[in-house]
Length: 426
Image 1 (tube, rainbow, N blue to C red):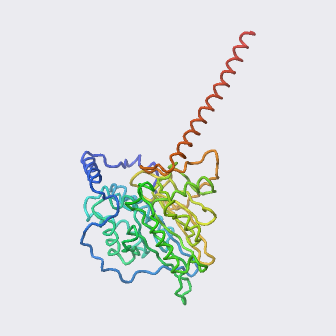
Image 2: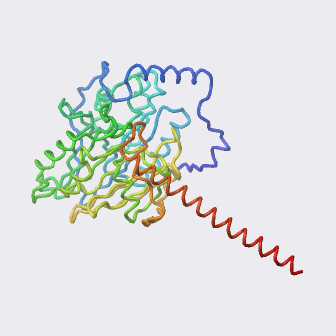
Image 3: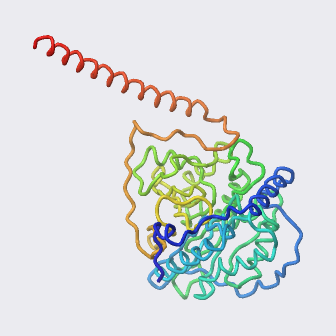
């Protein structure tokens, strides 16, 4: 096992490319992205073989009634070669320790703004999937906001993944009425070898949508996707007495994650001090999960320094993963992954963080504090929905600073007066 420390960067001098050529390329990509809307995972024509779809593995609880998932999020392959090597070390060390039944790649696998050709995707995908392929561990993907900023669109990336290995369980949404490409449901079957019944499932949502508007300029989940989830769950027996307990993955967090931090006991850190989330008023994404009671856990990434999790409204656990890759901006702690272990009967979720060194991390407990709450405000570019909340937060913060300053000034003035009085007596 290879150990990685933050101080190692001072020794080996790993720096992001700053050469003039790379800057020029980046500026050209930026200009093109302003002209052509390639930041969403839209379709681009390529010639990728997708015939390799037979003999996909079947997800199943083991004989002990357990099912373990490793969530890698924000790997950002393609940022720089030295970072890609470090990403491999993260994946190797985590998977070696955990030996999961399934790996979820929950978005921003690529820093696609640095990828120039479709051939580069194939080279990077060999690295992304190497640790799973060598151990015959199945995986699936959903998209983040950076995966489709290069030459390949979302459907081409899905086809590349599906054709690359039979271990890929990634599916493509082909219903034009449902926004997003990677909306699908993976069934987890019973541990009973004599039964073919479904014991649980994994809902996967695509949040890299072009029509989010003010809901979330980084991405969102649409009401049509929520309708699809309800129909899919009903077909499995959920929402009507015969509940199938499931979990879900998406890349962009919903705004309720801020409510979770402000109002509940959680484990982990709000290192970014804000959430680049999306509003769910129209889609009712999280409230539908709470109402139905079938999805017991929703996990996401995107905000690299956030890694907290907790139970929202005594119903569904909301949880950030741990940023897994070395590209883009750093997490607050060591790179790693969130581990999610499901118990079949009775259904339960246990989760923890395993870092790049293979170490199990103990996350700190955060208690609600009415005097230091985060504003219910997504860091979207066009955000006007909760301007009043943000304004009140700033007013409260500034007022506190002013009051403390006045109190300090008064105390200091009294102290100076007392000193002057003592000098006069002398």
